[in-house]
Length: 248
Image 1 (tube, one colour):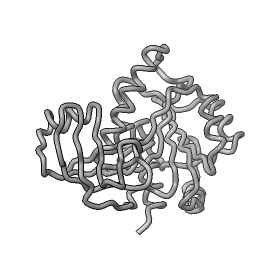
Image 2 (cartoon, one colour):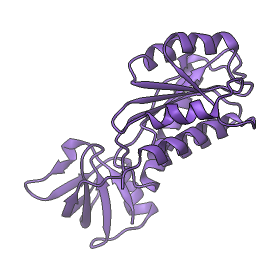
Image 3 (cartoon, helix red, strand yellow):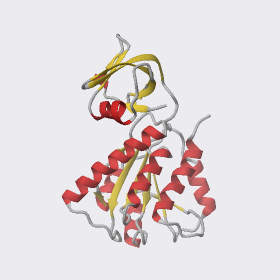
């Protein structure tokens, strides 16, 4: 069943109505070719989702009748921030899509020393718009209650400053060997804690960058003896955290 996101002003709970506006109107009418009487899901991006029936298709609005509302447990109790070193080509799009599916709360693109990709202000802005739309589409597909935020590109210094406010910050590092210690670190994380995951680009982090993260309280973890690609490392960490934090 199709899923859409709304802002609070679009919701008229006393009348049991939702007013769909903007580009979603065209998507419902002309792309999906939905008709009056068909049903869909709508999320307010925070607390509830609504099972609705299309009441009326107007020129610039789709009017929905709320059939019932519920507060699903699709979201993890913890807010996970994926700090992703900028990868080459279109890998970032895949990383964002999969991170959203795995429950990430936000994705922070980071420009580190070994990043091949260099974005000027205009390119960075266009990329950010594209990445946010990918996050929105992935949230719809995976039945997320909220759309994860994709931050503007941050420098390494800015990323570490942002991560300082989180309860736990993890940095997978190929030179760190300690699987038992990694298990202990991960098992100590509890639902409700905010978590940062620092992932380097192709070529990984420079040792100085790792040291800077450790000095600010980041915890090193191992992902095993095999060297993972940048697009694999983040997904591995998110998968492990999801299994650790998912509630029955």
